[in-house]
Image (tube, rainbow, N blue to C red; front, side, top):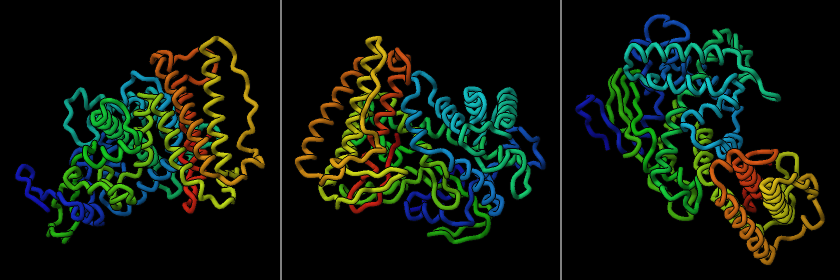
Length: 457
């Protein structure tokens, strides 16, 4: 259904099918940067320059494709699993917006991630076209200039290439290298408020902590029912008929994201149509996986005990299918995996890091482990996985998860974030354990489905 919105004289789309037709159509693009940003040659390093240079506000198809490719190349180096673990292990107390940007800046190898985060929060105030008073407008321009200086030639962490595959000064197609920097800044700014609002809405939906399905289930429902972005605006480049709409060139269409939410999939059914909070079509947000990973990590950070028990539950949910395993080891990354090996490694992580935590609390050096690591596959790892093996795994892993939950639940935020002894904070240790459990269970997956580990060592 489409209804009139008299306040802006623009059609408002409220049906999912019509919304997808609008968002998928190549002639409907996000509104351009506006009169101020569209002025000839806005000063490089200003807010107007940034808005005129990023893919988000680019209507020209060729320029948009070039700029979007740069943004996607930058995102390709940001592993959602790493971001989720980093967010889950981050200290509590900081503004979520600051944490989101700081973690992204660290992964991009930008100098002084805290200063980057402060500047991005300042830029957010006017990035989406809001009117700023002169003082705030000047502060935003100064913040963009500082970000340009930090992103034009990013420092590269060991083993990482530049975010867009260039040297940061000139692109491979001859365009000015400041355009590449603009895409990096745009990624940070667009992640800032939207990701923090997603976390805020999720906390509002689950005030008593994560539900049994964990952060992923909670976020999927929030994106459908209470999205952080409620309206998407699209301007028509030429006369077009889209769905049931006859649109004139220059006309603006409003997509009501909440009203156009798809129905939730029935229990046991495959995932249904994707919610529209991240858009769809050629102008969809390219950073969905990274944003959801950061939001999930921040929610898990709030309750590290639930993070570990949730990982145990996810592992056992997969293990319940392993009695159908055909006996052939699965190759993932540079290792081979089997059901028994996954259970062994999961138990190893739970026991080893719990021993480390207890030793550090007691003021002792943790004793090194002597487990058969994932590089070793023992004859026992190759055995069939029976119903009796599943029952034994449930008994052992659930109890270990409860021990972790009891111990983590007894610690204050200060103890979790400023933990005694050498090594990661206990909050980050819990995030590592949960990620490792997801990795080993996901490496085996469900028999008959492609293996896809959800975490990593």
